[in-house]
Length: 342
Length: 175
Image 1 (cartoon, rainbow over the protein chains, first blue to last red):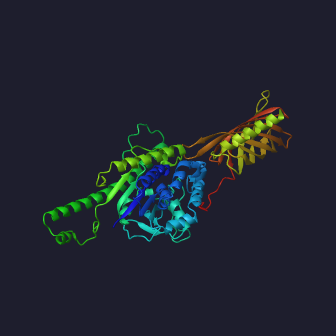
Image 2: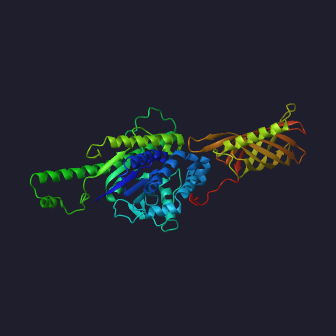
Image 3: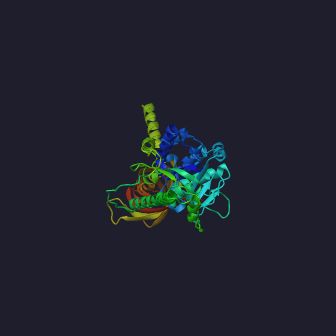
């Protein structure tokens, strides 16, 4: 039997929407539990606590934390000349040390759930997922096992650190060759493909931006606003591909299943069908059945400022409520057979 | 009356401190500006006006974060064909911070006040308005009243912070 996965994308303070989804899902559909959790950026702050079902703590964090609890801003010129990031991320480091204490981290390791935290390696440019369990064999990216609470904290921090704005992190500090890691959203905004490769055949993917961002009816007059907008466009494009590729893969699986069914309905023996589809090359569809990929995302932009770095408790409470409503509506509108559109 | 004044001062100090927490300008610690200044000294009666120029070193420490620095100035001064030394206290009060969008601060505008005693018996009181850029450079205009010899000094200055934060090893936010 396949696994069920929860995938949470990046989005800074918009993680409050994901917490609302998870909270209502747990309350209204308690039978839905997850074997695999994949987090990117804010999703990495959420996933380990969601694995422990610490939903009360998640709600407290995502409705009370302010920007000052995450970053400290300084003089731009002083930071650019003297530091490796525009903002000081020590407040976030202190928050992670406080809530990802050794006891919680050990419980994450001991749980039967696989937690993957998405990062990007600055030295290799590759996606690197840090895992709490022994890694599955994957081809498109690296999976590295975490061995102790300090490494788990450092992986959470690395995944949450947007490059340039926040510092890169050495997850395995002191190891050689030295590797620095930043937000996994640079390469993959939502690790849906990793969840598939980890054996999940039912995936709940919480994306923190709408499918259609709409049109900005503004005139862009200064370089910094254009830079921010351009970064948003890059991020959106990464996110689009993170859904499009698994969706195309799933369509191919459904097509194969439909062809096999048609052959069987027309009297072709199963052994003959299996032989026809047993083509001797690296086949990404071998042994795979069509997946159930549920994408839960807001209908309109959630706000939260550039990069989601404007942590406003009032705004986040609103995002949490929207997340709860979105999953309630989503589940109510699923077809009777539970098959999603993706 | 004094008690009310004291309470009002404490409230103002508290408000200043409370507001100060998010502003990165005038951070804790020291600055050490080496400034070159020049201008004119005039009593509006005799011509020509005298040239004034010199170098000044000003160590200051932030006493109210994001608002107030106190310190001293010491320097060499050339005017009226003579070289002399100057020394005295200085305070700087931040008027406003200019931010670069949401990325942080870029510069601050401050007023400064100082009293200087000179080795040629000068006594100056005055100050000016200055822009501190990147917590690294300072430029501005000053006016001093030289009340021993009854002159007004109008000057422009440009300075560099010798105590600016130098690039060190990256800080680990999890340590």
